[in-house]
Image (cartoon, rainbow over all chains, first blue to last red; front, side):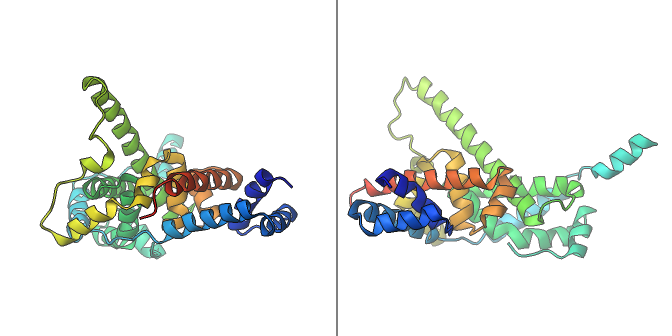
Length: 87
Length: 192
């Protein structure tokens, strides 16, 4: 297995897949410092994305939305339209 | 997103305001976070959430239950955000033409509102300068979408596939490429 193949397969490992090619890639990575580094970097990318802060929507935004929909007309259900066309 | 019960959903589909306010409560925080991660700007994120929920309200009678309700909302929200990114790109390329290619100072973080006395706003502004957010903003929208849905909204590959209407294999490929692109962008920065 080449480094390139191993790196491609290790993405499936990060996704939680456990096919034979993933097992082979894990074996390769265990004995290849560069590929091991590569996977550690990708795991760090995952960790940093996961650790991005979540926000609460501002209260006045929710109020604005509820106010805005009061002047909004809902579309008719598609079901009703097809029934009307059948009439 | 919190689950909205069937009865409330059906009432909201007939335009019941109390029921719709339950829908808004169930998803506003996640939508705001999603929009903020796409647009990296709090006031644009607010506009995007408002546009999303007005579209949700307008189209509610046509929601047919084929997909989960949250999947349906996420689909509308990602479309709204991607549209805004496209418009922004178009506008900035027009601006660049007008300015005779002087692109300096037109980075996305320069379009943020100025220093605000509101501490929460200030926190948002500072956090926007976070290098992960900056790297995310540098990615093409197709990669941004899958990474935001996967790592920030913590959705399954199946849910993401339902939201963007693409097979799981395509979602995986995009996540793989997105991760590699993020690695390139983040690892070439000096260690702070």
